[in-house]
Image 1: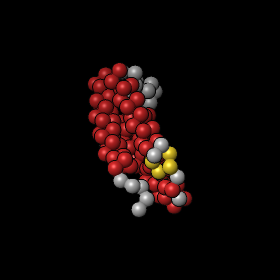
Image 2: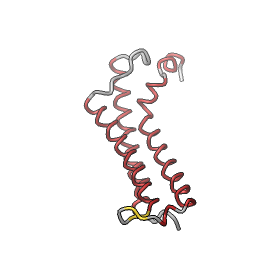
Image 3: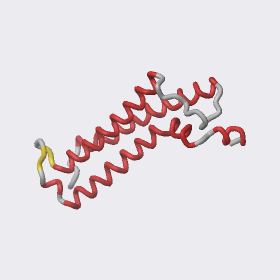
Image 4: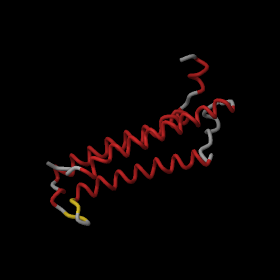
Length: 127
């Protein structure tokens, strides 16, 4: 990476590009961590709305992450997710690039989060 490019990329600009994938990674880690913790704690024996307690907890985690990603995509689509001032010295072309790549990666993250969460709904959490 050239010195000019590396000096322009700062934390908020990277969040703009990779934030969606970071949310997906958070969802992945929290789902499987909560599954292990809930199963070892015996929460699968409790019933909430006809589902076992672990499944309800996992669905809640999944929905929160899906809502987070959907909100992120809505803000980007409406143009409310501005480039942070002072964090990136961007030309209009660079800002358009960051916006476009950020949207594509957020869509990828949303699809990955949906795919990851299907196991929560389809399979029993504790075997």
